[in-house]
Length: 263
Image (cartoon, rainbow, N blue to C red; front, side, top):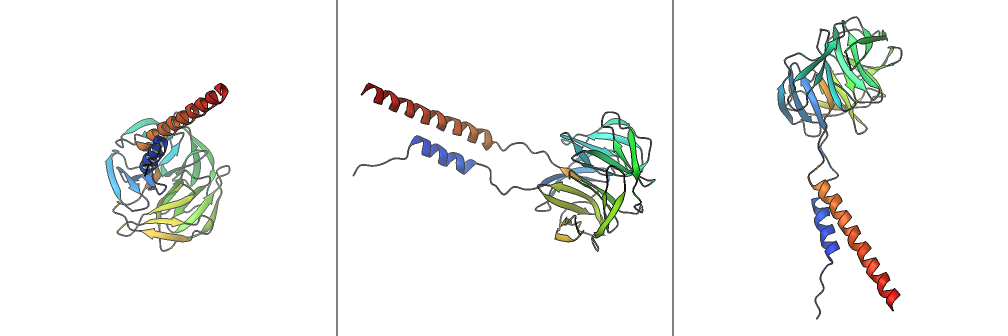
């Protein structure tokens, strides 16, 4: 019996597919808690400390691939280094703030005066948008990374108009009290500001209903923003392998065409 062997292309494809990244990936977020900075897996609750910021942050906002934070009850605005949690001073907004967050359109802060501001990411200057009408109470948290801006005050979730500052009550998250929220891959997550252990929640932004909860080893949640993760090491290999397979296929077709022409 004549033995048959798989083609080189088939072997390469099998090897590359075996090493390709899994479709089921962890959902990772940067987290601030008081002055601590770390990363949390929102699917498992596992928190990893990265570094100390040296400031008590009022939340995290992301825009243009960079990470930003305001200082709780103060006026400074900073860029956050996700590698170690260190802060680079950008500017002084001149208004004490209680929450920092973001949308796909920019970074925002909520002042102690109940006003919503947009932040100039070059110099930290605040531009008044309008009064939210949200009672300032502890905890107060702002969302990051979503198409819309949400603010949670104690157990009340508000949708905030980023053109006028007007806030509309969505509903109650009770008994959960969010310290912060983040939108990643079509899902809204929140971190608890009360209780122990501090839970991670998913919630419906249209009703404020909490749809799931998960224990974590995290400290108190003050800010969440999507983590930027590098491409898996196997991905460049996978792409290279596909290119090689394409080259093999092209060479076979060329040889076949030359043989037919010579016949």
